[in-house]
Length: 453
Image 1: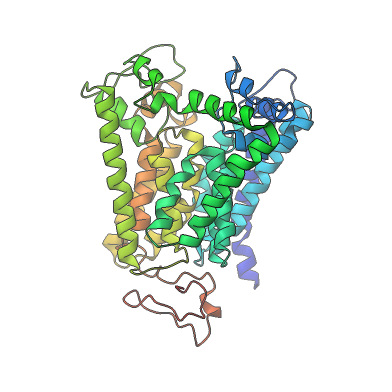
Image 2: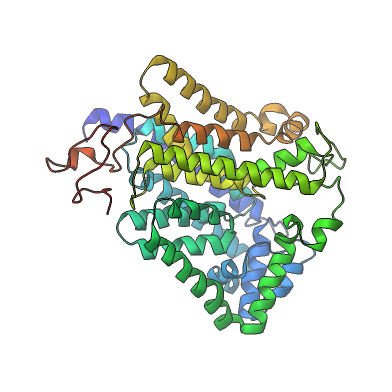
């Protein structure tokens, strides 16, 4: 690397070091590493991890202060934390999150498989900073889960589709929402990776819990988890029917937005009063039916747009597919809160490069407007910018979900990023047998990286 290249890396490296330091510090401080008695959501993970060693996870889901909301598989995968005192475990957890942040930042170029200038990586990191900070402050596992999803894709691209599928199964069994990655396997015929997901689900979701907890307690743990997390969004359950019509619908996803707009419900949290912003007052079941229909349309539209950009059966993940799959995951999942939107990170990076490399001033202007609108929605809704009262009201309209929608459009619409047709990061190393082909003929020779198999 020449001296100019090294100078160009100074600011991005400095920004990354600051962001990482702030996130880890927030995780340590909010988790109580420096103060006895202070806790965050990590407390529930630690209680569950200790319960694994006692071979009874069910009580952790009924903890009165912070119930465990993650599946039994996640508790088993993180059970090593239960061997440590709480404050020591907080330190380890925050450092694990910092390591995941470093690995994702360093690996995004190879995961997305396109050359990424430092400016794009820095801009994407800044857009994702607020959900990253929220994830660390709350002691959540969203960044870890994103790392598992991206790791699964990276393994599949290297020809290890079954291993990638097992890794994706670990992500799904840790936080459910990555199940929305599965349609991206089916529509391209990635059957070996899908087989890995099935195998991983059987091993990690059934065999391992039974081996660790015993058959009855494993079943009880899964039942308890379903009761505290999924029942209130399942129309056939008793808790769904018993929940007050004006109750708060948590999150920043498409479902939360539709419920707040289309029925009388509490649109704000942690303010001690019921505030509604609804335009209509439809039954809860009707709104959920509209949510499912809208989610299917959005997911189907994203799949079709990516297929039109690169027709045919491909096993290699294209950059827009990776970014779109992660963005759609948090937009469409029913319970996506602010910290969950760390999954926008790949779309934030690729979207920034998409509008910069679009052909024509109009496309660049529209693309830039979409990206900076997403940035404004995420950063501008912060209490530090608007004040707590105004921020609370703005969050009622799900700005994080709208930011995900902007980035999703930016990475899947073929009008943007017209040169994003080659799915290898180092185009210069393709050699004469791997030519750079135009978008009209995006098929690479079989010997080239990213070529269909």
